[in-house]
Image (cartoon, rainbow, N blue to C red; front, side, top):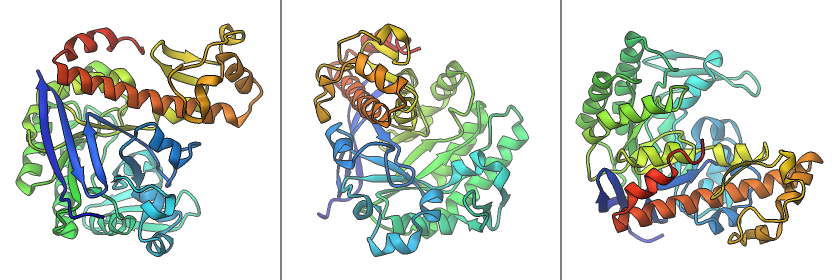
Length: 371
């Protein structure tokens, strides 16, 4: 790898929408950027080479899941996840904070110790402290490391949200200390606060006092209405530094992404493209297509005439409908590649429109297109 330091360059703005580049030793990430999710070291159902061909520049891995399988001993032998999964572009790792919420029946919070899990695989006790999370992410060799945070489920209880901010702030400080100084990599803070403007501002202010290479909005896309998510972003995103990347975690649908870009967000991740692919739902410039629907039984057209990855433009919707009805795994593989490809083309068009000063027209055309 070269001696490039982690940095963010803001290239242009169209109102709040931002065009930028993240520079890392493993390559440039054009923003706004979408990160396919490779939770366990794989973007489900897609070969690594094909992920590269979709023009994906960064993927996401998950600290909690990689800690359990394959485990840190294996990752050490490979000097990190890049070599293990044959992906030499940047990797961002979630700290395990989301699993505190999603696996809440298997863990409890101890502010001093961290999150105390019972493994969902074998019941083994796992203590994921802020320090442990950073240590594991270093073994994974993540290019962008996330602090451990407490991500509460959707609630309007300000006491619960306020306590989560207190815990997350303490853990953020400890995470930053454990991360140390490494100019080739980055550590991001995560703001909490639910849908309350004052709590979000409090959380952001405390993170700014600690100082991070980038800042994420956590605790959204957890069941709230899309309009409520956009509203809290509108009220609080501008409190984040203009010269640092802004990341909205776990989002989302094309319209979620478009609305968040409109409020100044730079980075996104979501399992939506591949999860939808496994259920027969394709994202295309025609909109969302449920290929289980009988109307596609005789459709000779491909999902995207321009997508030649694995010759996807040679497979008809009729054939995909047949594969789904026959319960063939090839259906989910083809549709998942298509969906990742579409998401990256969608992000490319967003970037082009921000650069040309036409983002508002693009936004108005597509904000409701995928509902």
